[in-house]
Image (tube, rainbow, N blue to C red; front, side):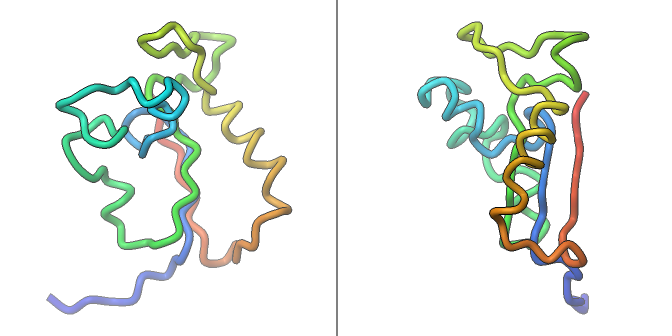
Length: 113
């Protein structure tokens, strides 16, 4: 199979446990998720976003996040509220100017259920 160049060098992700690479883990003081989950992921290894071959990952996703905490609250096992997707995007927008991102080579992803 011939490999083609990936047209993106950065991926920015918002969402829930399907995309979380450790944000909920950090929020809970590295206590959740527990094994058999691996290294803060809700998987036993790398998750889909890490398998795309894009090196620069700006991941805002949190396990248990909902699309909007005003509709359905997002909680961890320790009863901590996690940022919903709306909050993740709002926080990202406040920090976007301090980052050097080529918007033409950036893939934005939202995955929440």
